[in-house]
Image 1 (cartoon, rainbow, N blue to C red):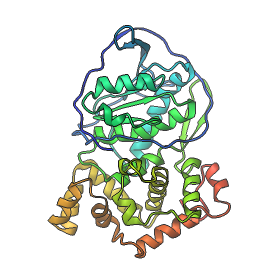
Image 2 (cartoon, rainbow, N blue to C red; image 1 turned 30 degrees about the vertical axis):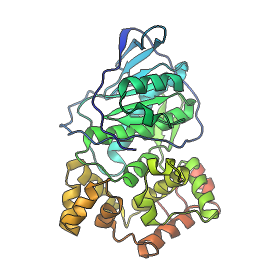
Image 3 (cartoon, one colour; image 1 turned 180 degrees about the vertical axis):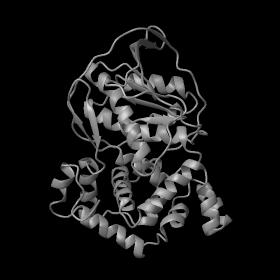
Image 4 (cartoon, rainbow, N blue to C red; image 1 turned 90 degrees about the vertical axis):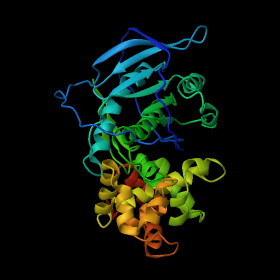
Length: 363
């Protein structure tokens, strides 16, 4: 879903506070997202040398008015301001490290990208009831539209608002939504929805190494939730062709489609585009969105009418055709994409995905 919202300060108070550490991880989720247009990026500022912990400051935090006041922590890192009321102290301690590690992945996975010019704000509430109140405070004019999200998050105007879904799922959701925050904060033009969401699903795969400060290793293939759904859709003949996939979106699928399959397919699509023969074009598309030349490239390649079409509804097929070729159903690219899916879900692939490794013959 797409929205453009003004910055609305969340009522709250800061005071002395503290944080603590350590937790275990499992499983992925469907992420229902709301993403907004990017803001104009500024040059990245110099940063200090890496520290064992990314936390620069921790304060007490409250939001709401009595009798509905919620208390938690406001945690500051180099690039994030994290507000959380989760009762899980270990999760609260892991979130700052995960967010900073994910940011490094956003900036390097596809092509070099800049740091946000300012800290972005992430809210992780203790439960859905607190999430509802936070959403209503931040986006009162649009809150009703977001209430259909039962298990997921919202990202708009560089703010992400999530709630505690359990240790692993909350971290996965934070990594996914963090990509949307990042593109909103640094890209001059929006990616098409299939690319924005597909790349976000690549950020869901990671492993953690416990210790005094948990280390995260991002592994885009390590995503059994997406893999299993893709395999099920392939087995039942429910795979969408490229034109259908590119024309759809999370909001459309949530309104009567098959959002789980759509997300699984854009996950597969992103891996397909990461293969050596298509990766240079993917790099160009992402770099062009970041520097504001995406629509200009569409116009110079396919004409002004294509640019106008691409600028409306984040033009899925027009932008795809500009960088990768004709996505016609049953055409060469559509057939190659479906062959790729067939190979991804082949016998034996699940064991490799479990280990965070690509299926045989893939990258």
